[in-house]
Image 1 (cartoon, rainbow, N blue to C red):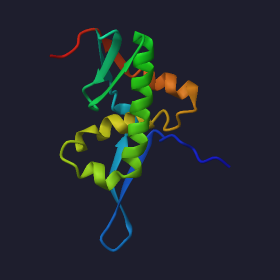
Image 2: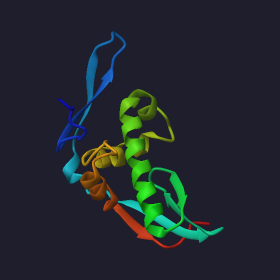
Image 3: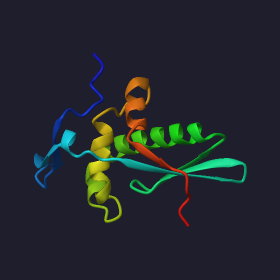
Length: 133
């Protein structure tokens, strides 16, 4: 049986304590977060560049839509990695603020093969056609 690769409506986040036991550190109502991601698009050097400032992710592709799809896949990969190495990321000063976005993505999927759920993650992105300076 394939494990479910989604986080349900409410999620308990655990951290491994000093004694090796799992300790709950947060219970979050993910559905109420209503988070959106930004896809800043720009065209340079014959490629479309996409940047997500909320997660500090960037990619480049031959078309606008390909860049957004790549950014979506990067966001899902990042969310999966973040939750796998939770202690490392949540204790990192420049990554801890990503947690609500990671949980928002994980609400839909952490599986890159689930096309329907990837499309839902894609819709979390608000597209802006201005590249930050």
